[in-house]
Each structure stands twice: as structure tokens, then as C-alpha cells.
Length: 53
Image 1 (cartoon, rainbow, N blue to C red):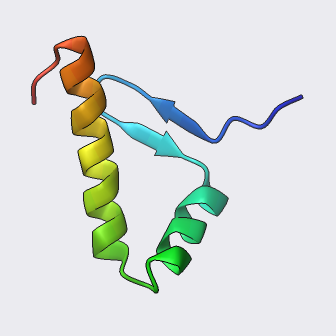
Image 2 (image 1 turned 90 degrees about the horizontal axis):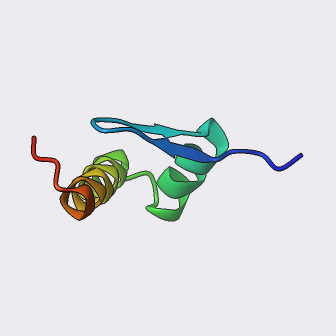
Image 3 (image 1 turned 60 degrees about the horizontal axis):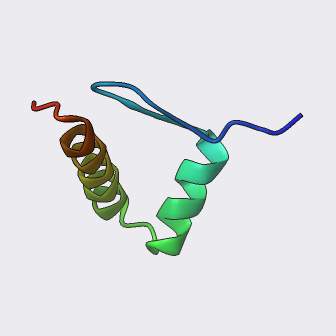
């Protein structure tokens, strides 16, 4: 069975811990950049479906 890595709801991004920590490692420990990236991703998805914060 395939592993689910990310779930996007109306107001949340639920993400697999391995995926999250790999993103932080790739950002050389800059967790704030990863947080910004995830928020931008959520905002992008919300705008695609017409949801606003």
C-alpha cells in the first residue's frame, strides 16, 4: 500500500514527519523558510478552490 505523505484540508497541511524533516534538512536547518513554503503551498491550494483566510 502506498504511503500517504501529505493531506491538504481547507485550512491545514498535514504532512508526514519524514517529509517535513527532509525539507528542513534541504533548507540547511532554516525551518522558518520551510514554514513559509508550507504556508505558501496552503495559500496556493486555497486560491485554486476559491477559499480565503
